[in-house]
Amino acid sequence: MSVDDKKVRERLAMYMGQPLDDYSCPICSSWTWIVQDSLVASPGYDPSSNAATGDNYHGVLVSCSHCGNTMRFDATRLGVV
Ligand SMILES: [Zn+2]
Image (tube, rainbow, N blue to C red; front, side):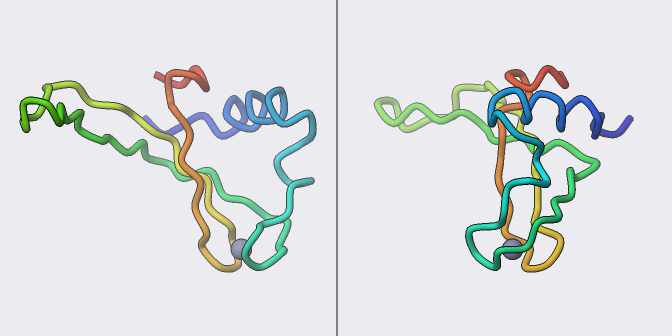
């Protein structure tokens, strides 16, 4: 199952107050973004015990189609997990 592109774009537009493709890349000024098909997972880490917490934080990657600059959003906040 891939990430729901439409849902991600709707949620980001709600937070940004504009459609994703009305936002220009801060690196190359392109206007076209790709919502990646897969989620990424980052393992939690507790610095006080120097150990993994066992938690995983899931992210949605949104990449500039021109230069590859990538933004990571919390998948739970975007409602895709
Ligand atoms: Zn770019």
